[in-house]
Length: 198
Image (cartoon, rainbow, N blue to C red):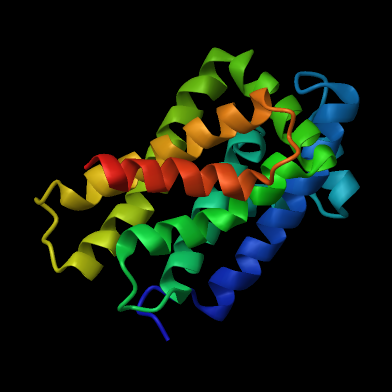
């Protein structure tokens, strides 16, 4: 078991946060972000507003919070990879978690709608950038440990940043394609191309 494994309490908290996030996002898509109140979200989730605030500090966190949950899932997936596996291969396998967000029409439509909410709100957009940095930071520390590097070394941050750039390039290329090929193939091509060029 990894040193990074969450406790039972942390896993339970994450489950409640995931459920609340899902309920809230459904309401945002149905009613609009600005029109949805914390009270409505709490009621739909079957809890009081006071209980809601034990899990999230604000309504914004329910849009942006998905990136924390996504980061935690990526970190857990990286922890589950064999310790002797090359780090680039580990990152490629971890990115399998993104396949449904891109390939599944319903998941992609939901994700795109939520991204439009974020892009339409400067405060949410600023927080999104912070969260995406946190997602990468979660992986950087783990990659540094695998490489035997200390925190001052730039190698792990460079590797993780390059992997995320490959994932984004693959996503854009796949969305522009006729989508007959699986997104995973585009991800493989992007990450392989990077290795061949360095």
